[in-house]
Image (tube, rainbow, N blue to C red; front, side):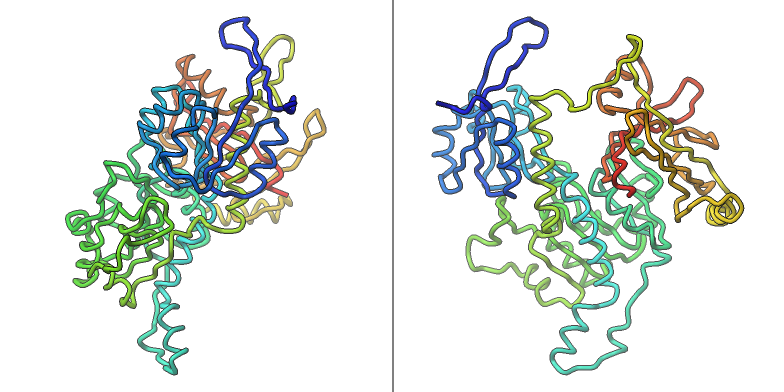
Length: 473
């Protein structure tokens, strides 16, 4: 007899038909055990197959409603055609480049990824590469171990005062920009989407970014538009010599052109967690033993740091990736654990003030004034007020002055910006869009919650926050 929890009581949207369905999930890559355990507890039926070929998996995939992968092989049109009952594909990672996304969506297959799961790991790794390059840590360590004590040749650079350019300002780019807040740097970002800049990075054109950047960091997926993006023409468009960091995908850089730019001095150093020569599985580098000349240069170069696609590969992200995937799979089949509150037959969209933000000539001095004279418990960003709602749950409200030249309030030109706490941000934004409200940018996710932005009828920018208050404890 099957476990009764393996069957879900589902309601067809737009009808009164109810039915039971067993949701079977095939795991074709190993992941953190919590993924399996929590799906099982939720009533899903889990199967594994870590060894069969793609063709062997295709022969049985019609028996499954879900598949969980990392990067073992490509989920192409042929695979999807065999998966006649597939309802979702979940990739335990940030990108979906190993999946024919357009074709999968045409078959009503939901696509799930977890960029929130390893964005912090990638951000820390990126910053670590920059600091290691600037201070020649690898070179100095190697020389000391070989008996050399060279101080002048290992003189480093300071990050403060530099301009850091970020290409790709999604979850990864935003997480990296946040890590730079403790440095006295200018952070610029370029993205194909409009209005994604925030308090941590000013969004600019690609041309402006290339004119001002000292350190370039790539946080973009591998797509036809980004394939071989960084070539000689792209590099030559930079006004200054610069350092480059790539923790995105290896094929976004033409390695031979990167090497040529390093030889000419246009690129001062490179931190590469990904390589053009990687296989899709990320488990191997070359199919044969021939080492390309450009790669040999990187292997021998003192101004290069190489890591084996591990920027997002920490113990913490291993668990966090699995948790994000579990939560997103469960969200497909179960209603939110905490539904929108209805009071007096009226939907409650805003649950409180999340923050008060305003422009200031000198935020640091102003924060210090409020701490001294009004007793606010402040930090570098303002103050956090803790309170409890009517359900006795811990809640927070933020108070923050911003510099007068902040771009975070754009496209509004007003001095203030409000932040409202909400229950279900994405659901609310969908409703607001249908009501004709102007939506600004895309939803951004951090460890302290999700954020979205709208404009009111007078052009005031409003930030909507689905909070995770426990992160402030």
